[in-house]
Length: 163
Image (cartoon, rainbow, N blue to C red; front, side, top):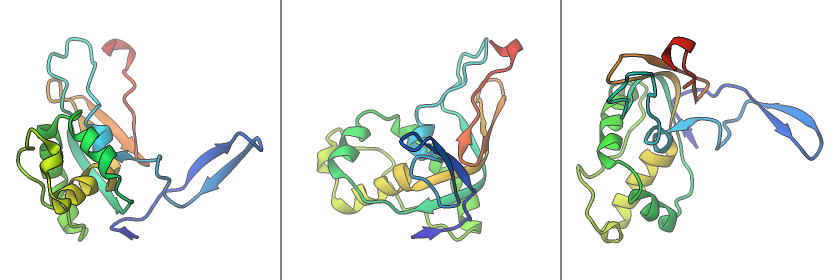
């Protein structure tokens, strides 16, 4: 099920019982996927080109999940695909040392994503939904400002002087 790294404990709040639960299993909502990365940008004051953020990973996890072909083909029309390809290249050196195999994806997407074969869709699903960055930094390409990723959560909060 999981290849690569260990998981960090996380706390979830169960509203039905008003109790906190600490779990050492990876939650499907607890870490930064490459899909998430595709929507993040630096909003530091004076930043003109805060997207896409550069990923400097120190811990990556590959966790397989079931593919929803309809959702995937819709998402492909909404993402910046060149940023996904760049993110894969940024993760590749660390993944190769952890024996995590990132699947090959097309350099460019066809204008009609419904024309992609099942193997290409499976590979795209893997990189968008199954690759998690657990630890590392996101770096603004304009200012060099680093946003820490800890336990799979990117801290995008700006300092007072950056607002």
